Image 1 (tube, rainbow, N blue to C red):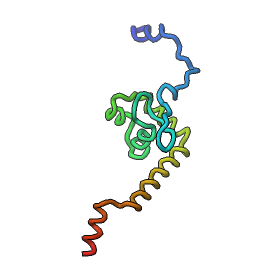
Image 2: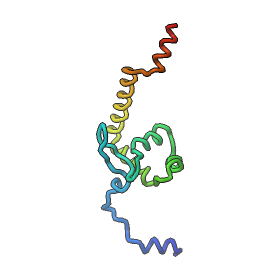
Image 3: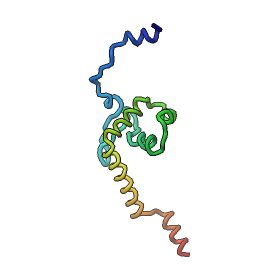
Image 4: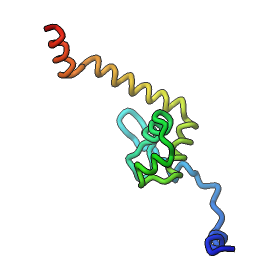
Length: 120
């Protein structure tokens, strides 16, 4: 048995009653409703979902960009997403709809300038 194996053997068995999500993911109150995020971080579960599921970044790429995260954090966030996928997808779509409506209501000065230029 190596020193590492001996050290591991001396540790107590993991407590399987511990809620893994609570170790990695917390729910904080925010404008527009609850926001799941990584414990002790401002990185939201939806951010990790976007990077991994929508942009195709690997867990290793996410960890390289955010060294304060652990692989457990990222995997817990993804597991939380998949356990609650419908809610997350609804929130993502709701946010996109809100942004589109705000853009429609107030396109901003650049769009107004382009419209004036197009009219001549």
